[in-house]
Picture: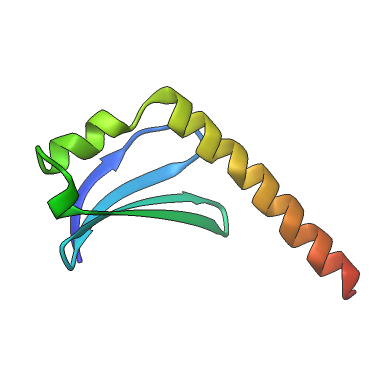
Length: 81
């Protein structure tokens, strides 16, 4: 797995990796993680195409998803404790 870039964004660690013919966009917040994969062959301009796809709407939606993930985990944990 090759590290391509760290992408700055408040409260979310974002890392772009290349592995096995795919780009992996890994977002981390505390113990939670989201990973998005895209085949290199699907991108016209390689890694530059990945950066073109990433806009503020994507970042905000992905960051909000962490809130839902945390809620889901807390609810399931509470059902069994």
